Length: 106
Image (cartoon, rainbow, N blue to C red; front, side):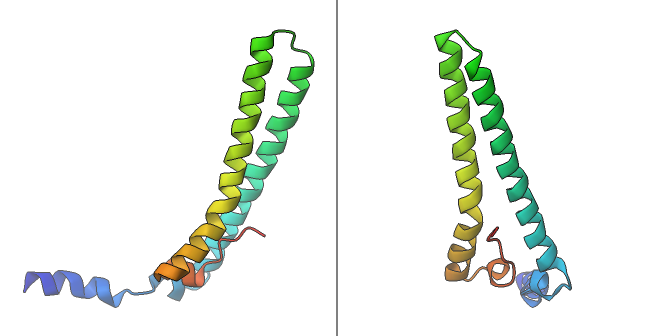
C-alpha cells in the first residue's frame, strides 16, 4: 500500500520538463552556449600552446605542450559528440528529456 502511495505521484509527473513553458529552450540554449565556450576555449588553448611551443627550446616541454593540445582537442571532440549522441540514444531508449530538448549544438 505504501509503495502505491509513494510511486503514484512520480508516475503522474511523466513529462515535467517538456510540459514546463520555456524550460526545454533554456536547456537547449545552455547546452549551445557551453559548447560554444568549449570550442572557443579549444581555440585559445591551441593558439597559446602553439605560441609557447615556438619559443620553447626544451624537448620535454615541447612534448608536454603537444600532449596538452591533444588533450584539449579530445575534450572538444567529446563535447561536440555528447549532445547528438544523447539526442539519438535518448530518443531510441525513450528518455523524456530527449524528446523535447534539442542538444545538437549546430
